Image (cartoon, rainbow, N blue to C red; front, side, top):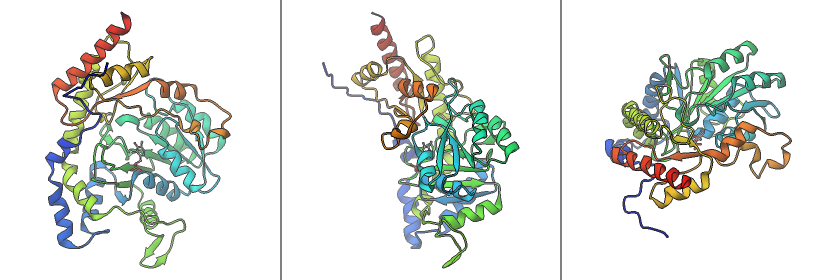
Length: 372
Ligand SMILES: *Cc1c(COP(=O)(O)O)cnc(C)c1O
């Protein structure tokens, strides 16, 4: 039986974000100036976003995956070098590693946080990696401080993947300020969304920032003068930067809305047989609200039928992706189990209390029926 659901709840809804800031005015500012690439909007955004993250430098790039690739090149990762990373974070880090011809060295995740296990990272140092990519998954900071402490003893650069964690903080320090370099995406579903693709690389190291600026634009040190190998064209454009400039002042408000939705979920789902995030405090900006459930297909079917959208972030671990899987001779038990169990609930600024209550209700009904 398929019922038509009038007040369906989507997984993401951008309306609130769009209603808060009039993007047509942001765009008009750029069009009036006739300057579309690397102009005043990008410069202003780079400075404002560096301040927001609490770092010295920010370099706008075309998207989050490019940010990761450029960051890896900037810290001198080259072909055949090994890069440590997790396999449950959507293949973005792996895309960047592979595009350089470097080799991913996957380590398992912690079963509670679903982010890189610091112990697994420490063990991976034996393979002499050239860098580690730490992903702050679902909006929550990974165990970044223990990992950076261990990495520092071996001189391994730490690349933070902050594409889901704009503004997540621990002891007053924000995502992107812990490692050697931080990478961001402004894809339209992220916590700080552009109206297309966009990304940024942040760092406290001025020499690295200079290299990153060269790498994003053909390797140029000056116009038409190539000072750095491995350059490409990956620029944040003025229209995206204008929108981001106008939205950045709202980021903390939107993050707080997401966090309070996540807190309502944690309260409302208490006692149900689901795994909930280990924390929804300031170290989380609740990019996604992710549960772990035993019978995910049936769970998702029941929610879909009741008009509640869900998704899975992410169903296939990187090392088992079809294009690369034939090379695999190892398993990552915690990662593989998580990929079978995780499911994301609607969580976005503008979601109403009654929508949150409905999602909790529908989940309660699912488990009541499952018991019956
Ligand atoms: C979205 C995302 C990226 C990639 O960003 P794009 O701008 O889409 O290239 C990288 N890492 C994580 C964790 C992401 O969620």
